[in-house]
Length: 315
View 1 (cartoon, rainbow, N blue to C red):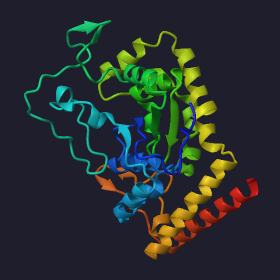
View 2 (cartoon, one colour):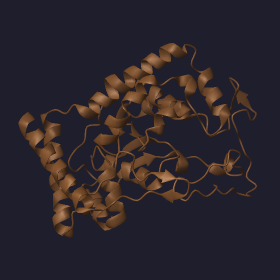
View 3 (cartoon, helix red, strand yellow):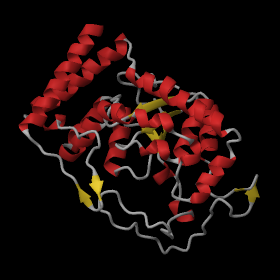
View 4 (spheres, rainbow, N blue to C red):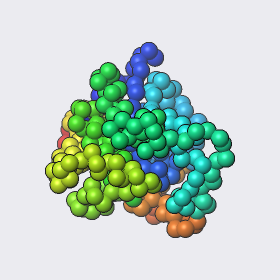
């Protein structure tokens, strides 16, 4: 694993393909923000999500200026034909994370293929599109050395409790794919790090119970898998995010300068008004809104100054 090497402005002929591993319960805006953050070489997506609400045109201009509009991201929600699987039912009463409304179902007549739909190969459906993500990643990475994984960590870190997400993390690490971790902000990473020490594959969840059973069937030694998962998270993914060499520290200075330029251009410090460690918490159908006060703006400004001072001391 490790961070993907980037260039300041790659050729327009440059093609980059990344597999996005994410939790479906995450807010869609945050998923988009994390993908944009990855393309723009931002380690955190909090400010990007904030700017998506305030000034989409600014982000579009950044993407054009950095020549990253041709980066391609494989997102299962769009790349998998939902009409051949889960569109026709909502058996567990899943609701939207913001509206709280029940997810609607589709009345289309498309043939559905689930984990056990014949024909089978090794007791797995051949035609089902929802049970082959790790194999797909191994297949593409064997043919494209630049194929990488973007791990979009939601505000509550629920991605690390989802069976398929964990299976994808393990597969990407096993085949040597470059893995890029993107989080809301450093505060969320610090807040949730301790609870990840107790992850066990047997406790993982999925929208469909058969998915958990299928993932568990592929893991003969679950204790060894748990140990390997801990090593992946705490010895490779998190340290790579935390530890920066001199060149990467200089890149952070450039990021801070970019955000300051936006604040000056917009004559507003609103772009610095990030969320709390839990993000915009959703309780039922009610979104808990942040208090936008001078204190929060001042705190955000001080964080930027502290960050620059920290970089200066280590350069």
